[in-house]
Length: 500
Image 1: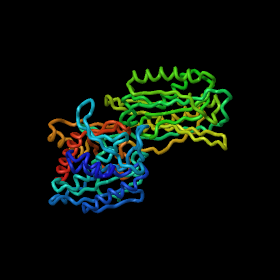
Image 2: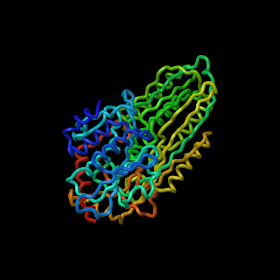
Image 3: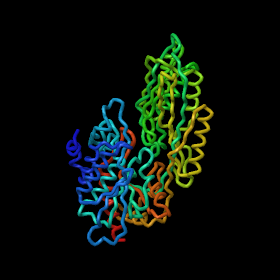
């Protein structure tokens, strides 16, 4: 599909300026840590509008937009979003995220009948291209009244926020910021959770499978997945957890592991997982019985598409049974899901952990199988975040794993007295006739890091954006009317801020 094909898909949608920019971005590969093409595209687009563009050593971009006539004295406002996306696809979808464009589809939502935009078998990338598109559309439109703007486009948000981590106070002038990376159009966010990665690794010795052993592959697929922060409260199934439960549920203590793979992104709830194991004759039947039980249970618990498939397979090398049991027991013990809620805000998750990935790498010449479990812990409480990380480390040590934690990023502490928040609340009420919900989000936003990098409590920030559901999964979709509402709101907020 070409850029023109995406443009033709969205040509009837409003606001046309936003959808056109989004469609153009959707045609450009933009995986985290591989943003070269999208950075060049954004730079070319901004320079084509006549704006000055600056870029730092990691690839973060600032686009300088002059004020509307008569608004030059207003303090500058930063419009912030990230240019990378989570790259997830269905198992039966052929797509190369390094080269292929996202294929856009416009249709009606099956449940609500609302018009949506989604992708063909992959993540859509509305997180966060739709926010960047809104910022660029507002900047280039002669009908939008605004003060001086700086559009801050960060890189590598989805894989650890490394772009935000290198920002300096000199890179942009504005000290009030509208982050456009939220996903509910009736809310203004003023806080978010921090996070930390933890890896548990086992270097397992391997040998040839026992003579006459049954060797089977177990595949878990069809789960909903989703954002490991924003969707963690929905209690969606973990394909990795379900896989291990199935293996353990076979009741075969002599299982020997040959392969263990699941999930693909640290910030996504794992939708698929697979394992290859060897065991005594009759293993296939035991696993099939367990698969039927756990598949039925998963479907009853809200995963109607869950499939657990058992099939005969082959393996050249397997880990010892006792080491296999130690790895599986550790994985059973690791927490996954909501661990605490905010006492003063009903329904808001305070602390969670996602066992998001499992990888393995065999080395036949050395006779080893390296298994690595990846967890992402989140909390709006730094104390609780560190407590969970220590808990995971303790479980790992008990299971004989090597444990490494890092890539920590701070939360964003709410400021209910924010002047920018006051403006945004008033404009929302005037525009839509009701009060917005002002709250915090359990997912990670770059606001916490940006505030820390600028320092001194100087950054006055809020976050809002259009409705996006299923982010970080191929079910990701954004709602057309919500994009129009959010853009109208952004334009109205910029007009009000231009008076300051």
